[in-house]
Amino acid sequence: MSAQVYLVDDDDAIRDALGWLLQSRGLACIPHASAEDFLAAWSPQMAGCLLLDIRMSGMSGLQLFDRLLELGNALPVIFLTGHGDVPMAVSALKKGAFDFVEKPFNDNELLDRVEEALRLDAGNRASAASSESLNSRLERLTVRERQIMELILAGKYNKVIADELQISMRTVEVHRAHLFEKMGVRTAVELSQLMTGRR
Amino acid sequence: MSAQVYLVDDDDAIRDALGWLLQSRGLACIPHASAEDFLAAWSPQMAGCLLLDIRMSGMSGLQLFDRLLELGNALPVIFLTGHGDVPMAVSALKKGAFDFVEKPFNDNELLDRVEEALRLDAGNRASAASSESLNSRLERLTVRERQIMELILAGKYNKVIADELQISMRTVEVHRAHLFEKMGVRTAVELSQLMTGRR
DNA sequence: TCGGCGATTGTGGATATCCACAATTAATCG
DNA sequence: CGATTAATTGTGGATATCCACAATCGCCGA
Image (cartoon, rainbow over all chains, first blue to last red; front, side):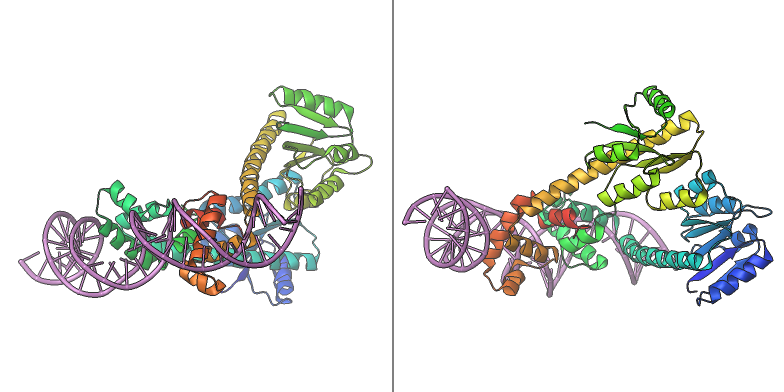
């Protein structure tokens, strides 16, 4: 499943028109006629962006947005609205919406925003992926190894670590070698670069 | 100069009213009657936040905002407007405005936003300060020391560094000790933690 | 021209790390 | 119970790092 432009609008004509518009720039579009529909189809792995109408019968676009936030949605959301007001726009953006566009919109501007959102999402996914791979490596560490990793990251010598944990230096060396192996690093410096920012 | 709430509005009554309102929560306010006034008084060291009216004779709030962005302003900006429209709000927020509030506003909400902005600024200042101190330490390094620091951060052994730079290991050791001293670290791990993210 | 600074190098000894070879103990799981 | 895994420890040698003591060379400003 590659990057998609998800579109949620209860107006058939708009879905059609936007579908064609997006296609004109080679963007694949997956339309949904209601917030409920999209919510049912949603999964955290969806990549791309979401074009979201606000005024819809049933669940509103804003309600869907809030729900998606709770679910941990990462898709950049571009709101579309014919009847937006300022507080609504401000609140949406402050909650993390990518953009907030009033209808009628300029086709090219909208397409530009969509492409910008797609780029953002691609970047997010990439860094999320590398952070995922790091996490999976971390999970393979035993408790003891993680413990010792912390002390290494605190810049302590094996000897000091051994003292603090009341074990022999040799044991520390073994754990150290194991965790370096599991984390895929060769030196404490590399480990620290992997880990700084996290934790 | 501690944290201040800077206020720019060309309406005398609003300046007065907001001044009293802010005072009611113990917030010091420095009013300006025009964008030009504030711009003349502005300096990068100003700490606090900026309450900025949009519609003003002369330079508008939005124009002032853009100018301040160019100048590297760090003050969080809360726009106040009686005649805002959605695209204006969206554009301001996407450019980094802290908030965008329509008049008439709810007093307590506005005060909450102001306090939030002040907290944000305080945090920003704190991290900017520590990053400043790091930069000044970096500038005290000689060219050679910086060069060797890079190689240390690449996780290379002194021996390898010596080979690459075509100098003796002893020289590398000396530079290493010097730069650790200047950077205020005891180990390569600490150095890496200081530097990762930067550079 | 003298003094200071930065880069450079050496010696030698104290500490640390790296690692192969080897082994014991305790807990968990099928 | 037998297999697996984690934690533990030891020995000994090869490498690296840390550091005091000491010194040379070139450049630049007073």
